[in-house]
Length: 304
Image (cartoon, rainbow, N blue to C red; front, side):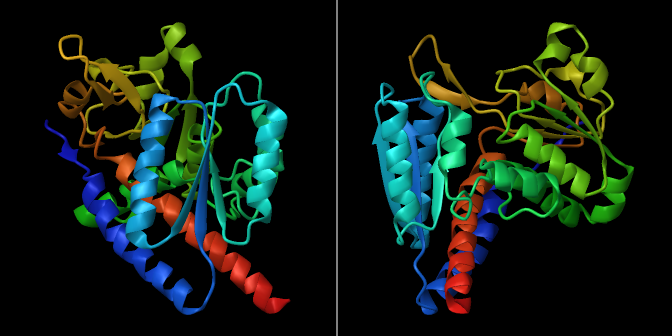
């Protein structure tokens, strides 16, 4: 068996057309729409992500503001910058990049975000709404996982509801930004859901869990974690991992996933690769959430 490739770039292109129409409609209404990213330090993956977001925001005509702070930034200074963005009428969505340096508490910073500008749902209010199945914003990476799945199901002619109702979705990784939201979205689709993390691997039990999966979503942040022996034949594999790997001969750095692609492809029915799978859709979805935030604000202003 050789798995069908789920082409994230193709799916992102179609989604981008929809978002471009949403941006145009918002502009016609006279509403402001702007995205701000906040990066503390120089994490390789975060720097690459900011670069992509800047490019796509410009392409779609969304105003973009980049806040870059050194890794030594004290908590108080970061909180002050976030408060400035909360008050800025030109900013409708704020993305705080992770990881944060050790002197800064994620929880405290997340609480400081305006929930109506928190487009990745890290504020406790938004995280709670997501867990209850009534999200204000669906976090972009988790949303993209299921957008890929839904689009692929449509392309192969499978009924979405029937597929999810009979499927076990196993999510590897429990991060607040990907793993936990993905679990919530799987619940929303009324699938059976299993959640595992690094402890399953440490205890030698990872394969026991993952080989039961009809859909295997891997967001552990460990390059090459999933190999052939972890994949049930005929399953669908969605690789979310973004890990920098340096070529020992050239010194060049490239991104690899959490899944050993060729090994998994030989067993799976379909697979979303890295790069070219979840990532391109995530970039566009973040802009979509920014537009949604701007739309919410415009409606609220109109009603008042």
